[in-house]
Image (tube, rainbow, N blue to C red):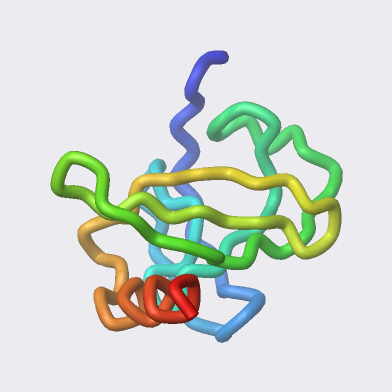
Amino acid sequence: MTFIRTKEDFVCEHCSAEVKGDGYTNHCPRCLWGKHVDVSPGDRAEECHGMMEPMNAEMNGGDFVLTHTCAKCGIVRRNKAAMADDKGAILEIVRRATL
């Protein structure tokens, strides 16, 4: 599995935020939702294109790791949270996951 860095700006399909991609961006930093577009990170080869819902966030070595589930096909993926991600949104996901 080879990572392909793809710099892409996008409009979040969940909250409509305009997102400036840096080549590592795989979800909206405001609402934390993403889109199921990769088979391998950065390849844009996935045909599903379902929305990836943030379901959980946990600490790993001092960083938050987000768990997303595709609302269309059900695949589960884990991704490191970015520095620009809304910390309040991350904490809300943690709160929801522990209910």
